[in-house]
Amino acid sequence: MKKERLNPALIRAVYSSYRNQRRIMNDLNRRLSAATTREEWTSIYQERAATIRAAFDVNTETTVLINDTVFANKLDYDYAESFYHEDFSVQTEENSDIFFSCRLLTTLADYYREQHDLIRLLPLLDRLGQNYIATVKMHMASNYNKALECYREILSYRSNYSLIPDLSIRKLFFQAYYSLSCILPIVECKDTIAPSQSLDYLLEVFSFYNSPTVQKIDGQSEEIARCIDNIKENWLWIEYRIDVADPETIAAFIKVSHDVYDKMLRAANNDILKLPVSTVIAFQHAAILEGNTSYIDAVNYMMNYYNNKRAANAEALGNEFNEGDFYFQTKLPIALIKWLDKIDILSDMCAAMRKKLIDEQNSYFISLSERKIFSHKIYEACCSWCFFAVNYLGTREEKENFLISMLINRQPLTFFNAYLNAELAVLVAESLYLHTPILLNACETFLKVNGMSFTRRDVIEFIRKCALFHDIGLNRISKIDGTQYRKLTDLEFDVIRRHPELGAEIATGNLSIYRDVILGHHKTYDQTDGYPKDMDFSNSPLKVVCDILTICDALNSGTDKSGRCYKEPKDFSIVLSELITDSGTKYNTSIVNLFLNDMDLAYKVDKLISRDRENIYYDYFVNYFDKPTV
Image (cartoon, rainbow, N blue to C red; front, side, top):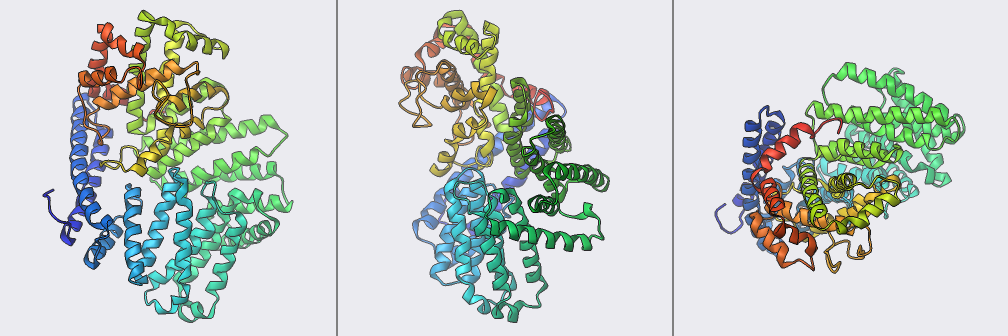
């Protein structure tokens, strides 16, 4: 992009370039999945890498222009209008650059607030609230209250309702109530509002709708009436948290669930399979709370409903993707498994039901992959499912295979890095056994203490698995990691620095053997730097494994010319010189010295990360990626 001052025409060009980047990348990803030969796949992958690099260069220059104008308090009417129209032309689902969008929308909202322009301000606040919620789901918990304030600010302008001529803008008041009563109460976060507060917002929106002002203007509006029905129906999502609600909220939940269920069932000519799954779940849970049924009877009823609806959807939809079916397939199994947790008897039957639900859910995600249906929404649902369902599996091997096949093997960037790091870690571990095996004594003892075999072969295999799992937390922030095609902001890096802690949440029970490695692989050798800042792994028996993976990460990321667009790739020799310079502080000196004393290791590593990367990636892709088994 030619260097020039930002202007409305250039703003349009920036967004046009962004949309074009997304279109090209989506097409390249589609072609990559469909490639049938090594040559075709490698060519497309290299084209994809060049496209990422070009996009990175353009976006870096664009960011400088925007920083110099928009974020330097130089926004004027023409700039604001151009950004407003262009940013709203990029739909929220398409816009993966959420953190940048939050900053831009905040700046625009500040501008239009000063102008007292509600026609612009209210849509901005609504969009900003949606984006903040998206960042909370990416574990930026501090943005929860920001989302809350966006919607509360919208409601603060209710006295202007009669002054707003555009129905689509007036609807935003009801959209704000929808978010406050239906969405924010079920977003998992330490600041999540209580179920009783969601009820307060529900009652408040009913009162607002029936007020003389709204009735005079929109009392006959079918769109506004539908907004009210939508809020009432979707408030039943609070079922997710109803067990911790106060008696008043529980009573309201029971009443609303009956009202909605009866109304929808009449509209569906008494065909329960046509009802939204949330309505059926809520109605059954209400029956439990009323004492009209038990958890076991409700589960049996819902399992029958589940089987019948799956069959009906399969017949009606075939291979077509449907949002309603997606919600049904991904939400109902979790709800039923949680109900099964509350049943103290018939444990064998409950275990069989739980296994069926887990197997069916896994099969659903696998079927989406086989049909080449991909999106961030699908991947994030799969990731959440894995972190939930793994706790119900038995043996360590069963859990490992589940996480590898259902999670690690389904997100391209973390997938490739995991497998390449595993290859590197095996090479380093083999060299350690040849030259300084004493460094692995603590690891052998650790395996022995945990009742595992600790032969040389077993230790190397354990280190390989540590490499596969060490970055599993990145799978929970996939919308940041490697999708922006620009230099990441400090805020985005802060989120990425949380991935060890996010990953460690899965390292419980018989997976706790991976906990120190997941948490400690970004700490420096001397533990004075890196993250998590408040943790020290000096005395961990797996300290040497952390040191191995720290070096493997440096070798992998430093020489990667296609996966990580925010750093220029380097030759192996340059990365090795950096390892030598920082040995003793950032890196384990004994491991670094292996590359100087073991020429076979140095040759194999150089070949792996520099010359054979695309070929190895292709082999990984063919043999592992998107496969239902390990």
